[in-house]
Length: 145
Image (cartoon, rainbow, N blue to C red; front, side, top):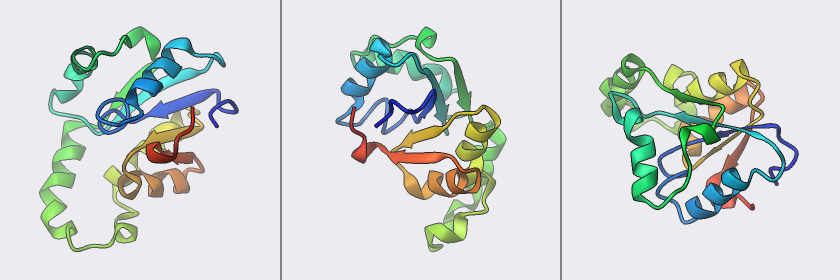
């Protein structure tokens, strides 16, 4: 499923950690059977992004920053703006969020860095940016390694 991609974007929460496939994903990235480049693209902010590798260790992962070409996290400002407006967005359908910069951010990061696919557990917050920038999206629930 991932063999055709040279550059892969991975979500952190709910994908690299906190998912039933996380262990298999760690092994795939560690073994890197196809010589691919791996990127973390996360909505973590406000210092939580600095705890990612501590959390991976706590969960039993062998992954280190050296396994990843680059790590991207959303800015504190963008995250705060999305959270501030979230109460107003609770009753909005996901497609109505399609133009929100926060929702498009992961797709934009992939586009700017020639990352061909984004793997994430939250399509409502990621798919619109991937569609806009012609990035393949794989829901981690459907990922076959």
